[in-house]
Image 1: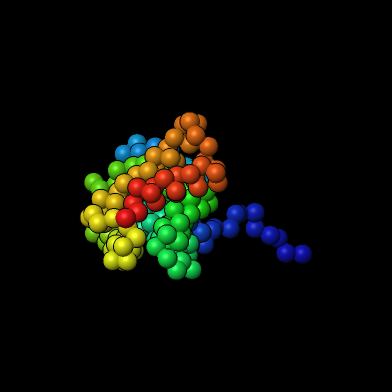
Image 2 (image 1 turned 90 degrees about the vertical axis):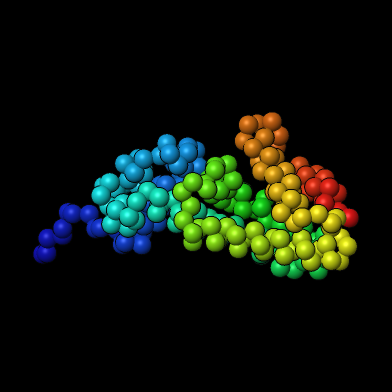
Amino acid sequence: MSVRSTRRKRPAPARTREAILRAALELMSGHSYEATTVPEIAARAGVATGTIYLHFPSKEAVVNVLYRESKLEMQRFLANAMASASTPREGFRGLWRGLFEFSRKHPEAFRFLEMHRHLPYLEPASLEVSRAVFEGVADFVRRAQKQGAIRKAPPEVLISLAFGAFVGLAKEAECGHVRFNERNIRIGEEAVWNMLAA
């Protein structure tokens, strides 16, 4: 009869990396980047503090990977929601619904991305991802403007107003002032579209 080892198996590096990112997201979605420490991330991930540095050179590296992965996941939701749109109005509905679905399925990632100021620690690669996601939406606005569906104004202004409205709705829902449900999302979508429409 063979004797089985009682030592626990080490998790694969990919699983450890994922656990670190998940722990960082859980902590940073509720607290600021500055208030979250590497030992806290390690404890939440169930690893030694030194293990973090086997996967990431610094806390800044952790938050940048987290930012890029979250931003790209949000972009996938937006692209999927807009894929079948044949008119600017349908495209806007897709964008709005994509944000709603992303915020429902990934609430911590949504809070992390949209309720914090990231600029002080973002690396060039993270800024490039952010720019690319923004440009995708700006291209939609410019096309809709050419078709006469969205009012003439700088796309970055219109995007800021529309996106700010969605984030504001999400914040008020977190505070319990409004329900983040299908009915209110539809009301918000209609109101914001009326603000944007030519």
